[in-house]
Length: 231
Image (cartoon, rainbow, N blue to C red; front, side, top):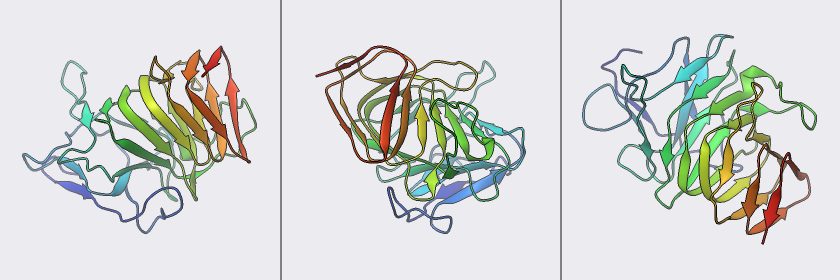
């Protein structure tokens, strides 16, 4: 991937059941990514649909869009000219060899963000050592909106270890955890709470959380490692 190449992700697939490897393109890479997301100059990433990154090496890759020499990264704006409101961030593919570590924070700008991790979580409850090929880590802060995760064929493992402040959260399948397999601990919901809907899969909460409404449907579960306040 050359530094001056513009990449536009525009897969037509969507969550929870319309995403496939033919309509959710991913870049299979062996090296880390630091180019910016944007539309201003060549060499930037744009999402106008479903797409993202997969690791072609067992060591995995780190995606730190807009990383500066000091290590700071770009905060992405959902619903912007480079990350449209109907986009889905996709991690992994049928050719993945390792995990994707995504370090950018995201301002959802009152939108619902969509995240999909290819594969299927096959571990048992509390198992925090899943198959790296079907695993993504999002360590930035995701704030100011809701998050929709997982779908048919994209029920891998997603670690959310940033200090997230979500107003709503929907899990369609797979494993989402706020504590990762290196004991990094994040947060999920905003301080005033929000709605949580588990349509399938497992949500693991490593720390205390507040939720105003909770809907756990057949096939779903919540595992709480600390105080969970509802209402």
